[in-house]
Image (tube, rainbow, N blue to C red; front, side):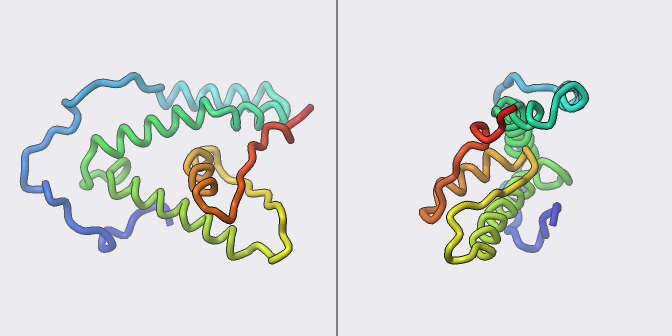
Length: 145
């Protein structure tokens, strides 16, 4: 479920052109190694509530998305990770998660606790907000000491 089935997507219409997508502009991005080190340090030094409050604060998710979109848009489909096809597949996966949450709810359910990896939070928050049958709320008020 992690890697796209290449047969599901049309071939790149620009495959026969000499395109350098890295030349357009430079943006400031977090360093993945530093992000990983900060995650590990926070996990070791925090309580469970403190750690999850930090995870849901948004900065880590923003940095993760910046890296993912920068790589997904700049690279080509020949790369195993970071291609537009992989990015589209990742969004497809998130859409399927929203679909499965809806399918598994009972008619009288008023709330759902959906626990998911931090990298999915930004996309899922957007997708749940766009679906008229859901009203997502932040977990932060529930993460009290």
